[in-house]
Amino acid sequence: MIVRLSDLYICYRFKSGTYEAFPDESRTQRITLVNSIISTMFGNEWLELGHDEKKRVHTHPSKWVIFKSVFASLLMVGLLIGIAVQDFATETQIGTLQLRTVVLSVIPVVLLLPAGAQIRRLSTHYVITDNNIWAKEKIFARDVDPTVRSRVQGVSYSQSYLDRLLNKGDVRIETAGTGEVDTVFREVPNPGGITTLIREGIQEADEAHTAREV
Image (tube, rainbow, N blue to C red; front, side, top):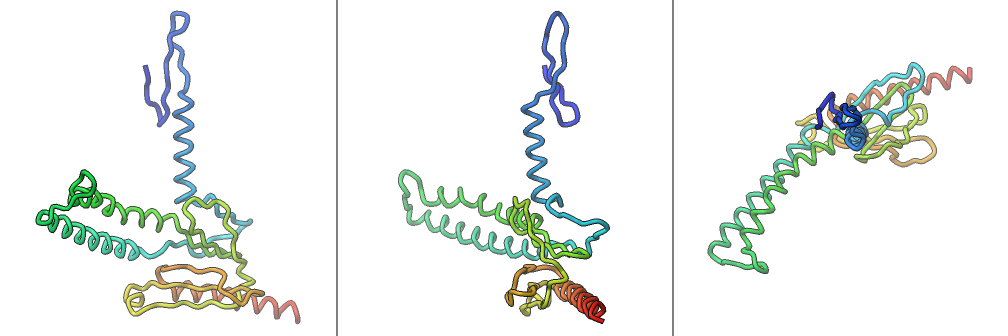
């Protein structure tokens, strides 16, 4: 028999006239794997903080990203329903199946697109600490190289008219020696505040450099 205990399965086997308990290792390994995947996607295991280093900002893309996905999904569903309704008149065949049958079977998949967008949003991390700037955009990434704040030479943000209404936008960060945009915070909320914070770090680095020269 099997008894669940704290998300593990404890199995009992009959041996020498008595029941002996032992853990179901395959079940334990599966749980460990799932926890590891969830932690990699949504947790902070990838973030390496130095001694006394603190996070100043930890954000994700704006929640309005989800609404774009919902709108696109509803548009696609409407289009698919229109094709299915029209097929009642045309009776189009795809192999052995009616066109409307194929089209209607795709609708549940389309409706899952916003869920996928939300997973992608929550697994994307933009972090600013006392010393570094981090951008983790790959869902299963564990090795993320930071941008050192003292090497940042320029920062700017861009917004469309709609972005300004929704208070979101892209923040672009340039570092010394490249002359190019090295890090982009995409569609983050309050891009102006994030830009100001990074500029303060640039100013602090310049003041520290001037003080050393003096």
